[in-house]
Image 1: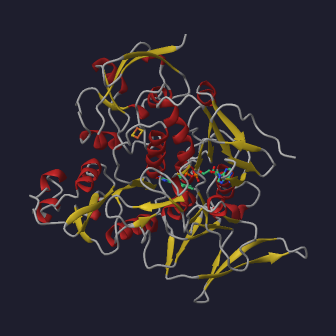
Image 2: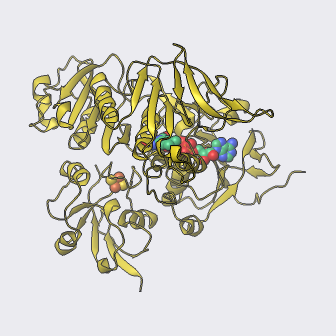
Image 3: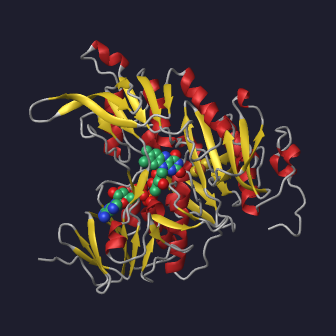
Length: 106
Length: 432
Ligand SMILES: Cc1cc2nc3c(=O)[nH]c(=O)nc-3n(C[C@H](O)[C@H](O)[C@H](O)COP(=O)(O)OP(=O)(O)OC[C@H]3O[C@@H](n4cnc5c(N)ncnc54)[C@H](O)[C@@H]3O)c2cc1C
Ligand code: FES
């Protein structure tokens, strides 16, 4: 069973995407043409892959790494609960069906 | 005999599939370009991320495979054709790129994304085995194999690695070699590490970090020769690095990280303006309206102060690629972005927004002794660049200050307990 997710674009459009096992969430968004710059190639350096996750999903991921926390604290539209760097989220079948919303650019 | 690869539909031909080349291809498709896109590349493998070559891929227990820039299936599903070959010349009259093997490709727009090549050592002995550079995946694999102690000989356990050049790549290699238990010596012509890109406090901090891991530095060191025992056929392996002061440094492996040279040959031979980089404008346009260039291969005017510059970083390659994709598809250019860079050494990250000049005023924010601090570079009283060390908290704020050319109150900015953007001081109307 492929893992699918719902990605919500910045204009509110919803896209249903398949999340391949060998990709991070950022790669899945980027390779499906969502406007995720991912300038740093997924090394937690740029925050351009910032997304919002629903609370239970974010909780399942556990604590943010120090780099992730520092980068996000200052990012446009930061939310204490839900803001994550999508490049730091590896594939997990438990994430099937989750809603991922792109945070504003900036 | 020249064989033409299908010339029927209009093609954007891209030479080089590094970050710039793949970036143009991705940008064109996402902006609705429906014509052919052909990516020519000499490396002949799925385009991959370069930064990990000197970081994650070199340390013990490194993953065997590089991080692909995009999956194979992405190129296929987007109809982006990949051609393995070396572009040898451009016929601007016929709008053709010729490959070394004789094939020719017709273009409506041509993108030169040929990147850069590491500068080679020219001293005697530079041809000895064990003298390496780091640019490509095969380079990284060769180096990783040299750094890893093999089981055959006991002395392998403490291989002597001499790194020539204390820039980003040299230091990243030095850190990886130290992690492998190698005995590392870094030879640097200047009097401190990363002197081209950062200020004294940052240099000294990183020097200390490497020093505590056992790495030795020799500053003011000019390499004059590499020596090794040669067999009658001339082959041999490096054993010593000799410097101008007469010192001899034991070496099983030598890694040269002495800068890069932009790959401008194709452009220059075709009569495009090039001088230590293919000259382009903010839209990536060369002096031929049908030819663009992006990435390490280019030289252009800084958006900050108009100074002519080359930028060897991912951010620049991607930003230029986007500007070109927008131009070709007739869309508005993307908003300019502050250039930025990063390096990770012994697990500590240095991240820089903006481009510092050696004569900028330097403002220290926080205490290097804590392992977390920032340095703010002021030019004419305005924020021109920000280095963040060990913490990314100031990075995005710093980038914004650079973009705004903000003026700041130095005493507020020096206080790390205040957010950096609270140090913005009112603009003087008469200021530049
Ligand atoms: C080891 C290493 C680590 C780095 N780490 C960082 C980092 O942490 N952060 C950062 O911002 N930057 C880093 N950089 C720099 C960054 O990788 C470059 O700025 C970036 O790759 C430039 O992209 P590019 O597309 O212009 O060129 P390149 O990546 O150099 O790609 C050019 C491609 O063109 C091909 N080519 C050239 N000429 C021809 C021809 N005639 N025909 C066909 N193909 C041709 C080459 O084979 C090559 O594949 C690093 C570089 C290296 C080598
Ligand atoms: S892609 Fe840069 S932080 Fe995620």
